[in-house]
Length: 195
Image (cartoon, rainbow, N blue to C red; front, side):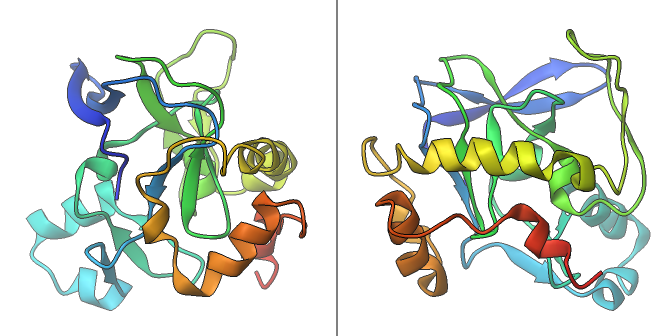
């Protein structure tokens, strides 16, 4: 589920729509959490769909660490890519604001953290010459994501958390221990160690 202080807005003709903050969202706020309404599909289920629905699933779903596709039920599916995102993923099926997100600012993530299986072409951005997200970019970016997540975790108990109740039961103790400084963050690379 996406943070409640967000809405869908038009970005441009090429990108279409994106998610924008309606209020200031502080660093360390859980922006998204996997929840029971999200649809989890096996690839053979997707392949059995008609072409229209199959294309929608492949466009808007992400590949999780179990090699299954997650189609978010709400407007989280419209989160766009940035090479300088304001959201950071974790191994705990939650994503944090990696810095303060201002009202009307677009909420973005790095698609390299979403288990893409083919290159993704993106719009040019100020501050980077990159225009393609590669499937193995996580190998070059995970340390940066880990550091952003560590910093966000320090704020977890200091800011309002309307999505905190959605932290998966199997991760609650670990997430709390990290936020309280009693445990170390599990690196993002652990999602890919068996590959």
